[in-house]
Length: 229
Image 1 (spheres, rainbow, N blue to C red):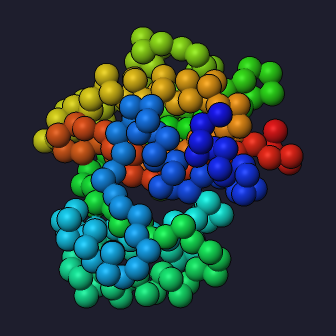
Image 2: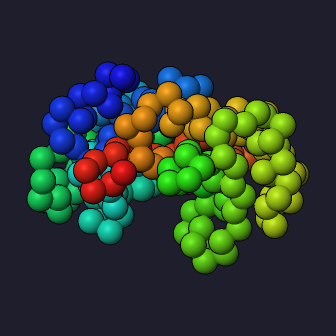
């Protein structure tokens, strides 16, 4: 069993934190944001300096699955004064123990995808690709495949999206790296097949930057519990 999952199950955590979820994604070859988990304002300032402003500040906990609604995220932080103010505000807003505070690079890109996984009672792990960000639920532009599948099937998923043109040259931006996206979709399915304790995976958004590179900006791996088979 993956040590991150084993540790979380041992603590009865319902999910991996964002930081640990991204560690798993990275281990499977999925590009993620540059970020540092810190334990103090001083460490936060040093991490932001190393990453380069602007940065994002997030509370990090396996029990904090909806960070924005909890007021646990601050984006576009431009300097140390704003960073320390955001750090204190988020710390005061969250009423549960934290793994730490996540200091993350600010990724530029107007094109957003979502990649997800659920376990179907009949078919097993099912991977989803769709339009991401705040429009995910509104437009419901998605494609699904049952794992395992290969990169050709992943490319077919992209072709099924109504919004597939945004993967091409788009308003002066480079086309999306379809090969990396295909590899990421296959990897998400493999992750669930190799780790039976995973109930769901949510990567939203997966941003396409102006150069066409893909970066997972937020991620959550939900674990199977007695009430979530």
